[in-house]
Image (cartoon, rainbow, N blue to C red; front, side):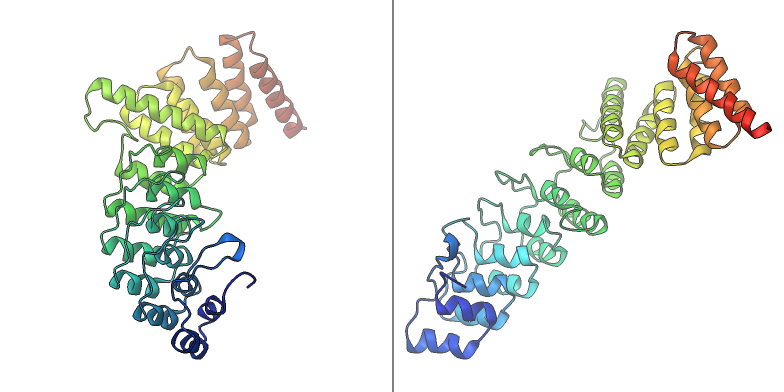
Length: 339
């Protein structure tokens, strides 16, 4: 541990005999900062980061400052315990006066725990009145930070568990620091989180009133979110948005066409066909519904019906090259099947 004092080394390993000798016999300062690559961590922070409960309690009993920030990141020992997921040390530090919302360049301790999916520590921090909406400069709120952490630092199931904990504690699902939670979950492809966020905030970051103009705005937002999800190939996520939008306007043929595409991409041919038929029923003069129907029937291996659907689309839009190509592919597939 180059650049660290002996007390930092034994704090991380939990060697209490040497800890006591260094502090009580040699008088080493319990708040001495390490210079290892400029980390600036105190022995207490080392013990917190490595889960050494006995060492942490010893340093606190000897007068270590539970709120002393390191000189590089501005984090406290509680940040180190939260980031590593050491819940017993987090409880200890809080009982000794550690600031639950201490700020740093990496956010509050709740952000440090959330971005790594440390559910137990998050629960402890919230029980000790951590602010679920405290904004940090780089990471946004604890809720947005948690979503940013998946799936790289935690599984989606863990992320969802942490998200639910924060929402139940009062986290704002409509915050925009730096993006809304729903936008982040969509971008990251966190389908279960998207579904939950839609459930708790049906209007997806829009006003809660449900007059006609508000519903139109809500539908437009959901449609836009669905398009973004499709662009990122998150088709299961896009399905959620289009389904919510259809609830607001069951007479919008475009929404059924878009959802039909998502069902196709997810391999759900029967559902894709139902949406295509709904689209045709609402706008029989629009060629796109027939294209979606033909594509669903191709997936169902019903080449005769598929060719009929594509042909109907060609009649509505004779210059559509994509439709013509699909028609001839269906005809060729039918020919091969018969031969």
